[in-house]
Amino acid sequence: MQPVTLSAAAAPARLVLSCEHASASVPPEYDNLGLSPEHLADHIGWDIGAAALTERLSRELGVPAVLSGASRLLVDCNRDLTDDDLIPHSVHGVAVPGNTALDSAERTRRLARFYEPYHAAIDAQLERNPAALLLSVHSFTPALNGCLRSFDVGVLFDQHEDLAHALARSIADAGLTVRMNEPYSGLEGLIFSARSHGRRHAVPYLELEINNRLLRADADARAIAARIAPAVACLAGISPAVETR
Image 1 (spheres, rainbow, N blue to C red):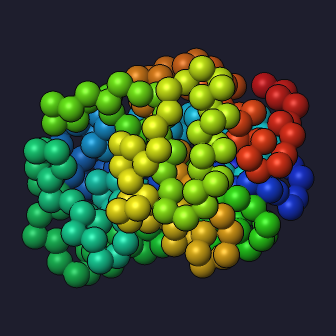
Image 2: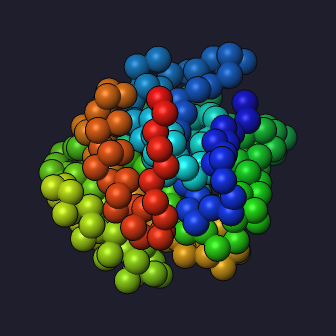
Image 3: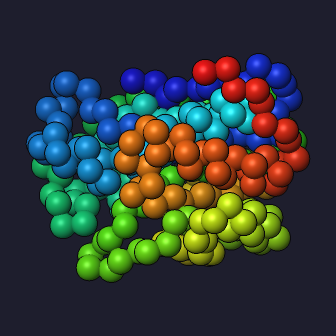
């Protein structure tokens, strides 16, 4: 279950997209980690609509994208190897039976199968496109632990604050409500993948969070992509590609 890499026709690219929680897939031998299909398909198993949005942006902008191939519950590609929730025992009150009492051999297998290939694929794209902006694409649930998140888009950053605010302004001009470092904050280390690859390759990086109520259907994801693509293109200094599908 390898990551999916969508490659642009032209190189070098000025933008590379990543999607750390693109899939809810769990290989059969893991027996859904002891969870119901409904739990896996919910926001605890993946970022709903993020893959469809990333794929559409990749096509519209003519830029490469790397998407994870497995559920974040097997191993979370947006977590450092030292994080307690790299392989979570529970998520928002839902126990994950298949992740309890994991031995070191199984942890190593999961990293080698799901985590390391994903991050190697991002590194490969940034090596091919050394002048690129790295944009990590995620979605968030509209309500969590009784807290309503009524806005549309979050722009997350720890560095590159000028780029973050420029992107936020452009997205707001498209009629979407935007918050900075919400619903999670890059200043609290919660943009691990973008930060680690961005710093390693000395490229600017940001994370984009979209309210998943806007992405529940593929048609909705296409509509949101059309609205934010000009903002992303302007930030990266590129022109949208001609969409043929």
